[in-house]
Amino acid sequence: VAEVRLSGTEAVTAHTGVVRARREVDAGFRTGGRIATRQVEVGQLVQAGQILATLDPADLALSLRAAEADLASAEAQSRQAANDAARGRSLLAAGHVSQAVDDQRQAAARAAAERVISAQAQLDLARNRLSYTTLRAPSPGFVTAMLAEAGQVVPEGQAVLRLADPAERELLVRVPESALPGLAQSRAEARFWARPDIALPATIREVAPQADTTLRTYAVRFALPQAPDWVALGMTGTVRLSVARDAAATLPLTALHDRGQGPMVWRVLDGGRIEAVPVTVRAISETTVELAGPLAQGDRIVAMGPQVLDPGQRVRIVQSRLAATLR
Image 1 (cartoon, rainbow, N blue to C red):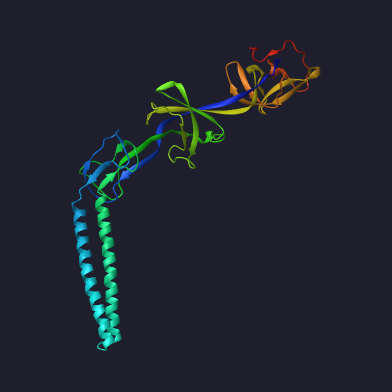
Image 2: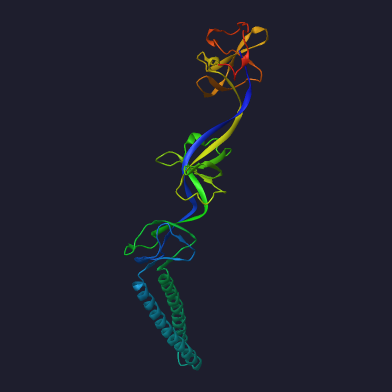
């Protein structure tokens, strides 16, 4: 027989991923046009407000000039309508015109004033659109991709380049659905292929609520709060997840038996009687098996020959050793 010695175990799984920036943005112009200049390169570090690219402003400059002319015309018409309304009030007081004629002149003056407000708004919009021909960095970061080149005509809102903020880096991995239970309780550490001897602490920041339609895996993002400078964007790393499990017993592989009702072992009771104990197999090696089940510290388990025994039989112990030393 072998004596049971219970010990706590950990389930360890590993998943490979890529270092990504927590915050990435696809920057694009807020108006359409032909790209005139591109002033940054891939891999360049830019600061907030730095000019990234410009559009040809010719057409928008003409739109601005047209809006200025419309505003001047609306203001002139408004002044004329206001003067007519003022004269109409005088004529109405003198009894030379009817109330209906005066009402028309007052309404025309109010409409002309509203047209001035509308023309002013169109002018402000034209100025804004002209300013949108200069693309500036919304935040500091590295240029990770160029999605358009100088000379290309882009519509409003199309991404021109991608910026990644290196201040917060994380490891993006994809895990199967079998790894989701207990994921939140796991202890995680990250190792990188560039520095395999260094382990960095990692914490789960985000778990995708839906599986990828192609791979059927879930995207999990691990934050790296203590990432050193050598952890660069795009590096490949492996996250090791450790989950504490209930205590298990390690027994000789020859103690495991199955009579068609699942794995079991024979426990020797006082007086030499034996009883079947159902167990769950956690891990198997060449000579030992890790079992979970209703086993207590110090239980004596038949270590060899379980296939020749039957329930209720009496046995005589020939030798008793620790499971760790019995081979």
